[in-house]
Image 1 (tube, rainbow, N blue to C red):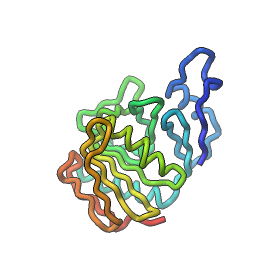
Image 2: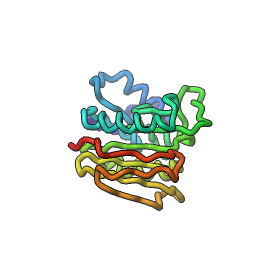
Image 3: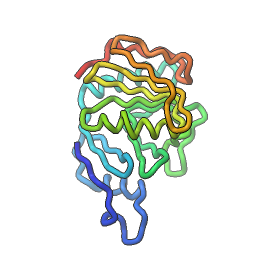
Length: 195
């Protein structure tokens, strides 16, 4: 994992640092192939994509296809969230039927109905901490954390006042019942690989 701190030296003199500026810099950097980059609270995190990570993401995307068309699903695509410099590249995001991209071609956080983050060792604190808080503040109805190190999943629902008010956790093998949510299906976890 590589972490880059934002600094006033990086911004043009007198200009306020923006997500667009930071992502523009990332595009110019020699980021190794197979790395995911996102900005959490103004800090850039780059993590290598592992096979276990990919297999879980792919499994979830395949299952979501039962209720979401491909054009309303995304993985590792920039979505700007509320708060200071939050440009996340969610492992899995599913969007509402009404969704339209903004003028720059970006998905809008208001349209996110479901997010999954698959834990990486070096960025786990983001997924369990500031990203969870940001998703709750943004009103994302369903946030799923999948942890291949503990072989557990953690489902967060009922966002209100910047926090999730319902959390359910079970080991891999237990189904994730999302039938009472906008996702409208049951996710199987019995084939999720462990790390």
